[in-house]
Image (cartoon, rainbow, N blue to C red; front, side, top):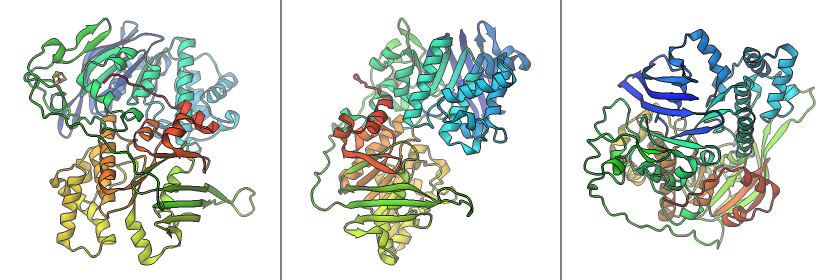
Length: 610
Ligand code: SF4
């Protein structure tokens, strides 16, 4: 058994001493999958690093114990710990591009793990490495074993990482967001592989993820973390059917799906508190919808609420008077306007061709069609979701329509926006079209210039595309924009790094709205965000659509998000649209084999109780 007992982890940071983990307790048995879930910064990954003794230089274990079959790992000499790390406990890290050695062939990296931790040597170890590559779904493993990491895609690198972790044949596997970077079909394959190995070898799995659907399909038990503490532990089925902690209930209500389409999602107000601050009472109190008078001053302990169910909440151990709250306002979101009249955007035979740098005398293709003759229509006030695996051409299509690929690619076909072909416009007409079509990118951290204050970020587009406005009018517009996206006005004078991921995505939305667009290309706008922040952003996008009749071209791989926000859907495969139609029809009765396979691979979580 792998046990964590009252673990305390501290980090030295600029802001002061960060108590990253405050008294963590859990036990993982062989053959069991235990999921650690929670929002970013709650201490999930730090727990994994602490138990592997891989904390960063500014971190240390300040108390508690980690025991493997009774032996305290924190007291083990480093030489013996090296045998445990990789041999008895393996870890799959979140970021494959930084976890592989860039100057070593991937095969050698797997062979190294096999030779270090199993009796196989030389040719036998190499054959085993090829076998592992095949098992994690790398095509042509005989050939790819000689590749360096830079020749592999992100998903393939992650699969190599998984092969290295499993090749050592460990007893326990710590999987830190193991499939976050993968397509749903590869994700399903990797999760099946982990399940198979678990059965074969009685592998104990500590699964760290923010994807509750993956958890519901994989885990036997679940621990929910918040601000460095476990706040609820329960068998997975019980956790999803009857969550007890107010935060767990809100998280499950914040998940988008078809059933919640008519209402705004439950958004959890505020953000996770910084862990350098001292806590006098419940750490969730400022965000809790059931907070009581004494919650702010009394720290709750983890108490038993069932045979294997524990909760850290005073509602169960010390009930009292609820704080007065504003009554909830029931709001219904209107259904999308019907398809009638001319479409706002009519895409016909769109082809985006990238030229390849193939040497003149070498054979082989000289170009690559990332988008290969697609067509669709989008009406004002409606949302069309473009879905498909990574590399299928979704983002390229969105960027081509947003006029961002004019220099990099050869674009043919038509994109009629209010009847005028975008690809034939130039000069003033192109500038006007740019104003009406904006884009929101996936990564709110990379998409804002860190050297520009928020006011400058928002004003840049206004100066370029609304030159008729004077300074006073621009300031009024900026203030209206931050109000609209739910930020405080003082945000205008602050820098991007001062904001959380969700707040930055609001700034990115404000930047897109600044020039009063008619169409917004939303390229995975919530995939980098936690569930509760995703709910805030989806609510905001739907509200703006209702108020302003915006059309969204919504690129995503999250089917729950599609069900919640999209009216129509187009499924892409290898640059082509293989199926399109109203969302409920395509998702309810997919006709194409590819759509069926894609939907079958998506892990689903059907929550019936709040
Ligand atoms: Fe909410 Fe109070 Fe429970 Fe904390 S202790 S979760 S504030 S009810």
